[in-house]
Length: 314
Image 1 (cartoon, rainbow, N blue to C red):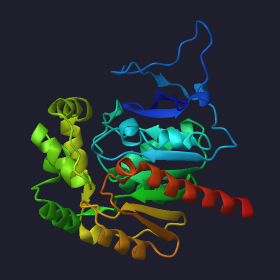
Image 2 (tube, helix red, strand yellow):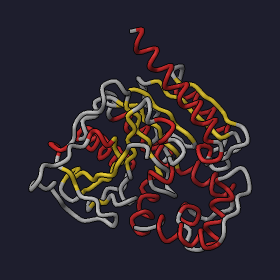
Image 3 (tube, rainbow, N blue to C red):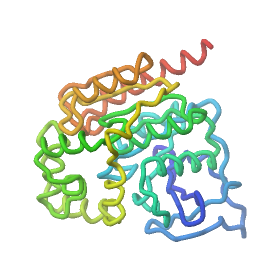
Image 4 (cartoon, one colour):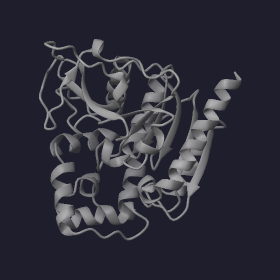
């Protein structure tokens, strides 16, 4: 209904990534001519050849929405997609080992996710984009901006940090009462799913156990590989440096975020410098975009509008 459709792209041999893309950017194959297919997926998607993709509408700026760790793209951004597609070309990728995206590469770093995203977007004809990243997706977004400044012209980040250092990981998990990232982010039971929701949301949300069971079954596939993603996320404090980002960065935060709190957000803003702005949304936790979508969407569109105005003046 929002005008985006799923397509899968071969990033490199052995690596397939699913993207939800504007329907007008995918050419319908002529009769008796099939799209190039590779590994089939559960939702009957197929990989597309580069020639079947066309460039985004030149009158609409491109916005890329990168999901977090507990849900794939459409679930994460369900309240943002429809609000943006009227004025923007919206692309919603599923990161590797989410939503049908897979790889046989052993690399589990956010940098590899960022590289695959950039390749996929360019195969889809995207030359410039604003990247919006949430939680794990925010770390991937920061890597994209660092590695591909010609592609990423601005960033919006919610509930995330530049990198998960070992000290931040230990402090955060101890504060939340979890022994490991996997215990928090890869629940195996209804009880674990409820515990994750409790720390991620500001308000107490109630769902029937049946819904939690369905969510566990559908959203938490590829557990082995996702556990490896979490291991590949943590870096030593000594290895961490602050990149000199040329892009404008906007931090859009739930003021009651228990996972990455306001202190972390403000410290990161100071580290990133004058091109970084911050906006807090009260009565919202880590899941700010789902808890207060109207306020979140308004703030996001205000930032996007200001970018467009700046670009027009140059």
